[in-house]
Amino acid sequence: MEPMQERPSDAPRPLILDVDTGIDDMVALLIAATAPELNLRGVTCVAGNVEIHHVARNTGKILQMVGRPDVPVSIGAAKPLQRRLRTAPETHGPTGTGFVELRGEDRKLGSTEFTPIPAARYLGAHVKRHPGEITILALGPLTNVAAATLNGVDFDGAREVIWMGGTLEERGNTTETGEWNACVDPEAAESCLRAGALGRMFPLDATQDVVFTMDDLRALPETHAARVVRDAIRFYVGFHRQAEGIEGCYLHDPVTLIGALLRPDLVTDAVRERLACDTGADPYVAGSLYRSTAADRPEVELAVAIDADGMKAELLSRLTAAVA
Image 1: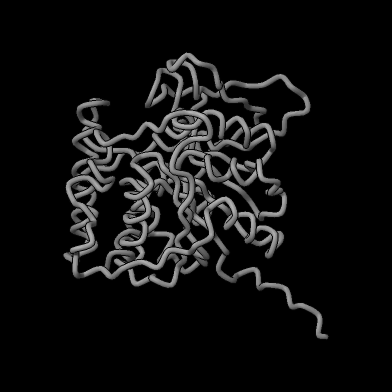
Image 2: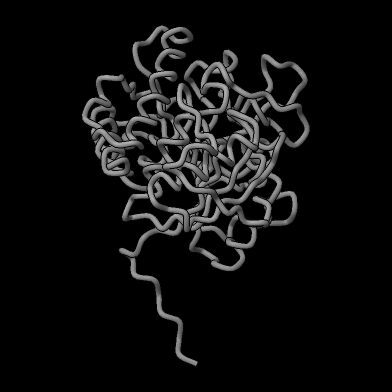
């Protein structure tokens, strides 16, 4: 038997995205599915921005849109570990994609074959089968990752697990101190932090360094995919105008994808912290991250500042290529 050859260092990086496909997840999916540096091995779906059936349908349709029906889509948790599901139709629209709805009657898009393996098992199987290779980028609530951990999956076997979630010093976007993904499933976030499942995090401190406007999207080509993106982001901009008082929007998920995997040089500051997530009954506090003094709690690296101009240029360039 011949010795196993090492994977070339410049080979595309094997990646599984875990998404709750709303508007910013959609942009991240488009970029991840078309970036030559990435080998998108699969996408797992979790309820969050919208209900799981909307997440699954949106995810499948977006992959079809950029000619990637080969990417397996696994359906995961339909609700948080212990709490009732809360969704954000006012932020992402009734089905998660703003003013456009990726319904089955869109003839430009085909149907999706979903893998029968549920998300937590799907993640565990890949980590076990390809030790040290798979990067998992979680862009929604951590329910699927936590469920895998609780089922005995050791994410030390992954190359890296990265999460877009939480906030350290920045004001929260769901409560005063809580970010959406953490607030939807605080128990999942706490479970992952306690188990050391997360290697890196991109909290609001980093992702809100960049504001995208409708003018920024003028450079996109006139394609079906670009029209879908514009109609989705136009809704998102309207929400941010009303909720945040800004003339534009934050694209948390693609900023995380690019800063973590495609252009790590655009992260200008990072810190290492031992963190915990509040899981109490008070809805105004649950989901808030705080620094833990427990010496046995693993540290996680947090990006806390981004080169805003560089990130905007990179994201728009990647998105233009994706929708062309």
